[in-house]
Length: 341
Image (tube, one colour):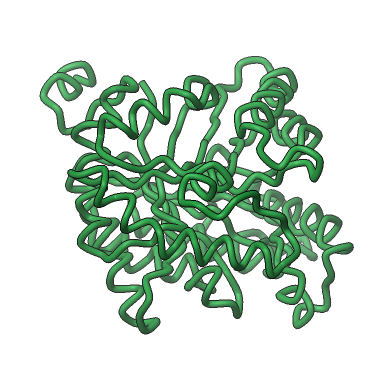
């Protein structure tokens, strides 16, 4: 049975404090409706890309207000971090959260964000590899710089909860060989000559490479992140989507990325958006063959970004109508509880 996740980049159009309050409320609502996990992203400096530079600090607050839902990072931009401090903070957080923490890492992608950290897009890959190995070494309990230094509190349990994000087949094979979870993004870049290439055409070969490289006996973990906005009325969902998707198209064009067409349907196709009534969203998601192979699916409302109360209603409809059509059952469902016992 697949696991159902909620993802947010904390992009509500309001103050930072209110962004954090609303994101917390959304995660609490997801837990109430049976979601298995909630995921947040880290972004530095650029509030239009994401509202959270300190993901583990935010998750500590959320952990204190939840009891069951797993809490994950998607992602921590590891090249910009001190790997030992991330290892320490995650170890403490996992204890405070009763072992509900999932750790997703990536190299990041906003060119100017690297500069204050004495990095560039060209050097981020090597920095990521170095930082990741240091972090894993700490969780393995190895010495750190001196024979007297080992991570405290010890956190070997986190080695089984590492995820990595990638946009490439080669990256997927590397992640599989490491035995880590594979994170697939709804923002997967397209080849310039095929701007409308279906997302699953790109990501299925990545899954193939990941599974082929996975060590024997290691259970695959494949998280597919998708944009899905569900409303009671399909026409209302489309109307609510126009401002956010139009703004996203403008940002893409300003950054030099071509977007074909200027209608809402053009933008839906360009940004891999699933929106409408539950019936419409189910039909749209069924066109994505990656979802049948994913072990985890996380849904977000970006870049539609409707008002908060519509996000809460979308969470409800995803749990009550959409996800069950793909074999998911709430962990609080009596049948699911019976199977677990």
